[in-house]
Amino acid sequence: MKKILITLSLLYGGLGTLFAQNPVIQTQFTPDPAPMIYKNKLYVFTGDDQPGFDFYTMTKWRIHSSDDMVNWTDHGSPISLESFSWARDRAWAAQCIERNGKFYWYICAQTVDNNMAIGVAVSDSPTGPYKDALGQPLISTGSWDNIDPTVFIDDDGQAYLYWGNGHLFYVKLNKDMTSYEGKVTEVQQSVEAFGGLRRPGKSEEVLQKQEKFEDVYVEGPWFYKRNNLYYLMYAGMTNRTECLSYATSPSPIGPWKYQGKIMTDQPTNSFTNHGGIIDYKGKSYLFYHTGLLPKGGSYGRSTAIEEFKYNADGSIPKITMTKEGVNAVGTLNPYQRTEAETMAWSEKCNTKENKKVGVYVSDIRVGGHIKVRAVDFGKGASEFSASVAAGVDGGILEVRLDKIDGTKIVQIEIPRTGGWEEFKTLTTKISESVSGVHDVYFVFQGKNITAGRQLFNFDFWKFNP
Ligand code: FUB
Image (cartoon, rainbow, N blue to C red; front, side):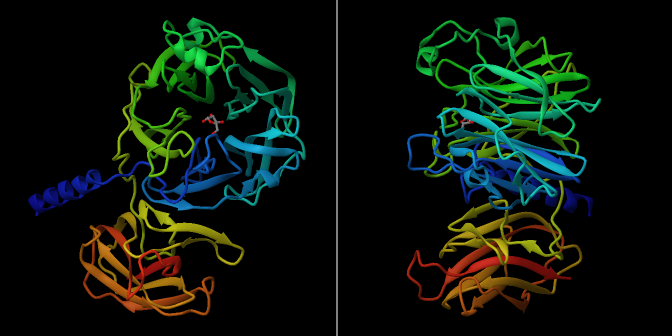
């Protein structure tokens, strides 16, 4: 029995590393990831790249969440430029934090005078709805440098907001999280603090041509504390592109001491690599972005995650990007309603949201699939239900185990339900016995359907024990 269990666990662990897990979301581009934990769930707040442009053409922000680090649920896009009356363009990097049951999502956007400003939206729930807290920017100093806010609440209750492109600034936030005391302070940069001195007025092109500098602070700060040491990770600079570097300090306002590069010279296919660091369920994770989704690049960036271990002295090791990403830190209970937009990997489908059901899986095409990892069937499942909608029939939903062509336990022919947004729950007996932990594949097929035709929409699924 012991031998069988070891073989099974090796096989299962082996399967987990055979497949790509990075980038973690395939249905949209998800740049500038900012992780946050609330009630034992990990949320990642991101931007939304629109590929096909040759700049950071971004109009909204997105949220995904996970309980296990591998299956990510899409919570849609609760805020966009339209949520901020003062914002005109460039919905760039953001971070959300909880305080006393309220969620404060600090964003940056371009203002009508062509500068960048930082605003804050507030909500009673991590996934919204969010509302512009002020009706005006929180930080607006008439400068392009006001981007990439990072926020942290210290043990004594004092909250700090750091931000900046090229220049690094901070303020001490008041308890209301929507105002600050004192003046905006600029952090003095030096070789000791950030590995190099960014000379005022030097453009990225000029910086890239310089040969002799170790690093400089560029943008994307990520501020946090661990074991009484304050960390500031940031997008630094190699000679060609951005890297992730960090500095530490015994105090929340410096002096900062340069600690080196965490991730550099990796084939990210993106000039930027904005990141965030968080501990979750006993492990430490680096979130960053790459341009590695199909059609991705510097302006089509996606969240990726790597696990790492701090060195005994608190320093962060060099982290190598991988395709395999991270392993599951929990299992998924199939006997609870699971949103169809909960995915470890997906192909040939997308997500949309409407007022009636929220986010659902859309644009489902023949040959596509959704993979959900580490599903624990326990002693066994008997029935499967799926909420689907179809304007025309012909679509088939298969449920398979462990591989895209693995054992088929369910096949449902999807009938017309009265419209593409008229969701109906279909239930069927499962055809093979299933127990224990499996990866589950929802495979999309069609009956005499032209490849590329939309098959059906998919809102949620559930097994019965
Ligand atoms: O996503 C737009 C900008 O690119 C962010 O604000 C920067 O951090 C860089 O990632």
